[in-house]
Image 1 (tube, rainbow, N blue to C red):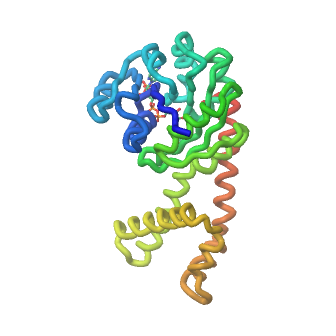
Image 2: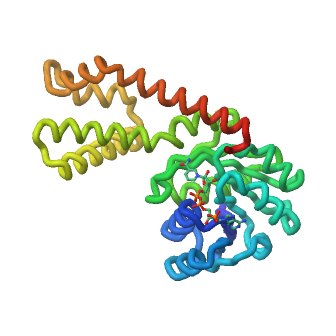
Length: 275
Ligand SMILES: NC(=O)c1ccc[n+]([C@@H]2O[C@H](COP(=O)([O-])OP(=O)(O)OC[C@H]3O[C@@H](n4cnc5c(N)ncnc54)[C@H](OP(=O)(O)O)[C@@H]3O)[C@@H](O)[C@H]2O)c1
């Protein structure tokens, strides 16, 4: 089956909007002519046009005419206003994708008027460097074509999976907030090396590359993480000594608690509609 070609309109040319534009162009998924961004700030529109060659507009009406896929990349508290702006021109053949944290499918579907396909996404900030981990869920009017469109867009900036909406808070607690956990772990590892005498810049680079390499091995080999760990743990060796210190520090429990706490907080925010 040949993949469908579609045009994408992005509401909001902020950090995430720009990341999506750059990812879609870099991956060759879309040409500049197949992308349009609506953005309220003039200088930001000029910047995006100059940097990426796409067209930008100041109002959402023109974007709705243009896009087969409309991505809501604005802050959660303005999603309702944006939905009201795009509602008059919306066609059922279009797919609306929201990346706004904490804004439910039901809220967006109601704001658009029932019957329009909506997809809700939890992305994460590594989208800015093409390494996002995102999860998406389908609204009640979204079908396989809408899901395929969302996957195509999200795979241009990283990896993605489909989940049920009730699990999106867990995704927030894991991959949404996860980059911050990883920065903390990375910083602590580098601090350890500095304490042992290694210069800071070398420590940070080695720690970051180690985290990157370990993650790449998990993703590319598909091996169980326990087996990968055992492969580098020589009996009586250095790694075994280091791992013992981590177990003593209850690192596993602390990370599990981090996901639990963040998930609970995401649930609270969801219940309040994203604020
Ligand atoms: N989990 C994560 O790590 C994660 C990461 C990034 C983003 N997200 C989600 O992604 C969304 C976008 O985040 P962001 O950081 O890219 O936001 P942002 O930088 O605020 O970008 C949104 C842009 O859209 C503009 N805008 C506001 N109302 C508009 C309208 N009606 N029409 C057109 N443009 C409008 C905003 O202007 P003003 O500044 O004047 O409002 C701003 O320039 C958020 O909802 C966030 O929850 C999640």
